[in-house]
Length: 129
Image (tube, rainbow, N blue to C red; front, side, top):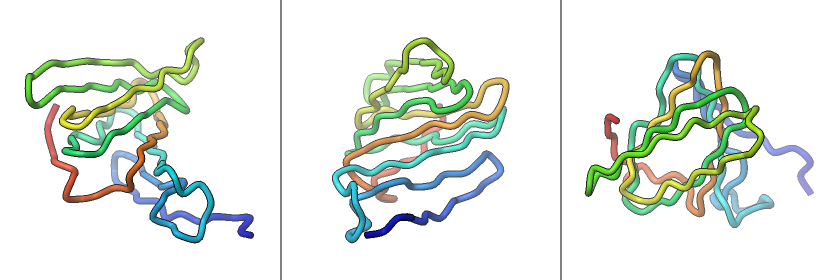
């Protein structure tokens, strides 16, 4: 039994991303879901893409994050402020073909993302929102 799982952090000027648990790691627990956390440096915007198949759920862990969403088929828009200190925890669903971006407000922020599938570069389409 493993007591420690190690994950690589992917750094950029806007923060970093690190997987948590995933079905792609065949000899590890929690293989039914894919999850990762994203640190967003204050004032930076991350994501800026949509997926053709992947469904995601995300929530705030630290700080305030502005989530912008846009349906690329009908142009409908939504915005959510994810605040780790709010009285209730918002968990936002992002369906396929909804472009999304995440911006840290006032200070760095951290979100956690859950999906049923690991990241697939062919399913991630860049999109400015």
